[in-house]
Image (cartoon, rainbow, N blue to C red):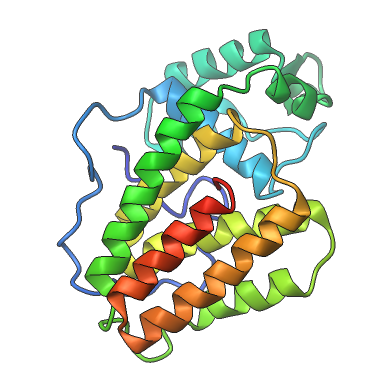
Length: 244
């Protein structure tokens, strides 16, 4: 898998990089099988950018050359991927001096037509396995203050009523959790899973996100106590409230 963590979009917040407990125990290729193709990588990262609100419908994407450098793949691969997304209606291509490639104004409507519950469930099962493994490995080994950034996200979620902001913060929580417990390479793996899910599932209702945030808080409490079984149970309880 291409190591683009922290380049394409705000996956890593400035100053928040933290060493992973037992660095090196988990590899980027956590599970057997192929890595995503370049086109799949472009699609998942753009979808994640929209979920994280670093790009919004109607906004212009960076040029293909910039995206290629950020993702570590060829410019021709990026161009082909963007063309495919244009054909799908996810992006718009405009010509002229002020032209470029833009996120489609009706992004949400187009994505809704692509929902695939079966594939989304398979991806969510992988994400659940990933987080249970990370939590089992890290319980009792997180350094003092290592969970402070995650707790701040939980508090911020409790303080907002804006649905899009809730989704953004929850996605950041899971990306930051992956990096805190597994390092930048694991964050990259999680980013791919989450970006693909953004294209396959409808956005959850705010009430569901708030219910899941209570399990976020429980997870952090159990991690800080070193209670591995209870921390894993919190991860599973989060999934019972609905997939990410």
